[in-house]
Image (cartoon, rainbow, N blue to C red):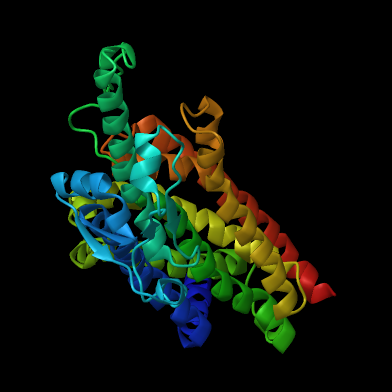
Length: 387
């Protein structure tokens, strides 16, 4: 036990001196979630501001007094577009799309001719693009009103146009939380674990092998299992530290949310934090053991970095299953690492109850990964010295 502790303390000391590891710990655990929620909430606020803004920028609106009257009745204010509106839209100076009214708008409407209204905006101008949907909705309302009035003038009931009424019936539980963009948080949490422990795993294996410091360590009277447990425990400690700090950052992160709807949706309490820890700590240990085992098969730091990046790539794409296959997840998903944890974290964010059977299943898989990885590392340690 003393040998394992000595190896563990040595590896922890080395990891904390590594600037790359420290940078990943600080950024991925303390800054990523607040930054992510701030960016998401800012984007949502921009979309909502476009929906709330009751103004329309138009060219030649004097050609369409009936349309202007309709907009005024809907509470909109029509503003004349600047002469260089195309240039301003390209330069992101104009934050709304521009409505272009043709010259003979009223005459063509009176003659029942087809009229084309143009909406101009630069596709790279995200703010203007966000205002496209509210403007289209407003114009569709005008078209529907104009069509209904024309039918009434001809003695045709407007009820004939829509004799089927469609209503939505929401089946969600009253206590179920709505999850939109916060559903992306599990993927970022798992990536933080993978990236945070990667450099510590590489430095303690391939890094030492490249520097020539692994062989002197093996000269000490320690077994392969002791080395494997000491090194893996050190890397796992870094990953678990990232889990603790990241989950803790959820609480101050709620203060930087710039959107009221998202702030009300993102309800993360102590109970949710404990559930996240039960889900993520075993996964952090399993991924750390895999990273140590993978890095030990490499002779150089760069080679180990490439292989671990491939592992990160696979892990990062695993949660995409839920985007490609929405709905009821298959039962075997609980036995798949990363995907099982993503599923359970989404359940926590929705306010659903995560069963102990699901958590126990995921923990059992993680323990199996750790045991297998430790066995591989202990055997590989002696082979490395013999080479």
